[in-house]
Image (cartoon, rainbow, N blue to C red):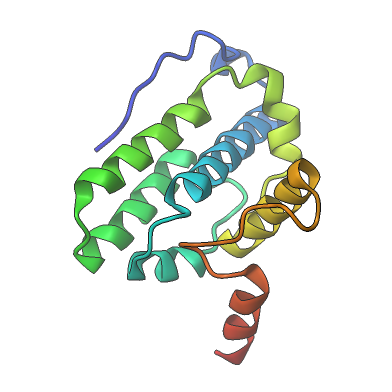
Length: 152
């Protein structure tokens, strides 16, 4: 299922240099993953364990990542109604008012979910301080995931 949202605030993709197009791809992907982490944080499912270990190429689009995330939930047999809602909301976030944030999101771009969780932790520490930021719920700690990955 493809999502479509207004892109009136985005640069015309036809006018972008290849470097700027890659920055836009990175920014959209980063915005999607960051919002998805927040939306699914209080939920627990085995599909999260699959997503946590995902990696992707630098030019992976948000649409490709949406499909990979969705597939993890479908294969796990999750109730797709809340999952689709969260995917749709995260996707919408990746499409709206991005021009202002392209450089910021592109600079925070990651190529794995573990790295995205590290970025999420850094953001929370900046927002809430070291002692007061929300504790993880539906996602494992990135350090724990790195240990598990290294043991594979």
